[in-house]
Amino acid sequence: MDYDVVVAGAGPVGLMLACELRLAGVSVLVVERLTEPDLTIKAGSINLPTAEALYRRGLLPTLQEHQQRMMQQFARPAGASAPPPMKRPPIAGHFGGILVGAEHVDFTDPEFRDAGPAASIFLVMQQTIEQVLGERAVELGADVRRGVELTTYTADDSGVRVVLGDEEVSAGWLVGCDGGRSIVRKLAGFDFVGTDPEITGHQAMVELEGAENLTLGWNSTPTGIYAYGPIPGRILTVEFDGPPIDRDAPITAAELEASLRNVTGADVTITKVITATRFTDNARQATTYRLGRVLLAGDAAHVHSPFGGQGLNLGIGDAVNLGWKLAATIQGWAPDGLLDTYTTERHPIGEWVLDWTRAQITIMRTDSHARALRPVVADLLNTPDGATYLAKKLSGAWQRYDFGSDNVLVGTSAPDLEFADGTRLADHLKDGKAVLFNLTDSPQLRDLAAPWSDRLHLVDTKPATPDTPTALLLRPDGHIAWSTNDNTHDGLAAALQTWLGQPA
Image (cartoon, rainbow, N blue to C red):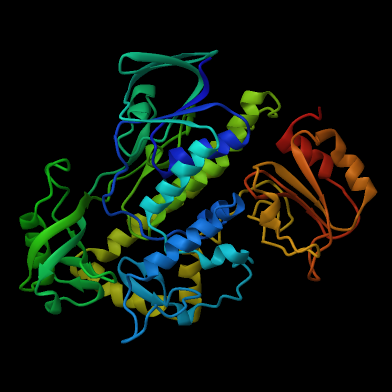
């Protein structure tokens, strides 16, 4: 084989997957048809699972620098040289354009686990994530080629042969991270089922005259929904007149101006378009994320409207879940069925995101029934229970994989525990291996774990705070595979075999 894996698509999902595979020592070729990164305006924030994933791989300092620069673009008090410190956004998020204040959220809710420093990262642009992951993938040894388009492939039980223009490369596996119109998905014949679009949306950064006639934030009008700000010149419109006739046609200032005037009723003139995109609420999902030697991740596996900023985060979660499982399969130590758990764990979360965005479209409609429902939902969401519910959903704090355990921790993303030696849990996950934390210096636990030492870190340390488990087994993606609160180790050997295969 020329490579263990060929990844189609060098967006954040494809690059995150490449990083995960390289951490495990798997050879990767990433191909991208675009010659340069796409600078079109996209997602502007990340959720908790994404921040945790990047933090656990050692990328937190870089993200903190980018977030600080991003905050410089926001309004600041008159005469201030820098924006005020922001521990968390003043807005918990929105549901169909209904803003929910963070002051209503109960952040002591048990589902808001202690994510450590990762909880401070939220305001990071998608292009920044792509840049950071691109640099990291190359640093780890991934072969990333731009201006190269995958045109076709063939596959059998032994691997795939991928045609890249005039070149053909062989690999063990092919992963489509090539977006909502994925050529990999279409060539492989994945079923892609869902609902048809009914809106035309625009998002853009522009220069305009008449901005004083627009209201900051999200606004509902008789003809649609629009958002203005928080960065000056950022506009978003939603019109319920069906999908665009041609999504690939160049977006002009006249088109954006007409949409903005129609939705706002304001006298505005767009004088310059800096970046712009169209979107719809087309919502579809592959029925499985794997067909033989071909897998899908990110928008190639699921598409939906952008409301709630779930797409980037959903795709990063796919990559982190898939990377170690595919590497284990390639290296020969994966237990039976491990790779199939990629679909069983990630598909329900993707399905939830599709329904979450569909529900927002319903409440954004301009008909009298939707408009009657809108203030009712707004009242509910701005109660402590409602705001906390929304914040948990948007943050991804609710996400848990079903490992068939009654232990409330098993299947969740691990809290960022502090240890007596000055380290935190995330410090031990940087190289992408599973980790067993022995927090009571148990020799029996060390003996149990020893046969898996080639694919597992054993960390002997003490917790810095009380009321922590006495031992934790973490998968490479940071999810808890086994936990105990006493000195018994029932179930540990079974968990090790379930996730790490037979001992060497």
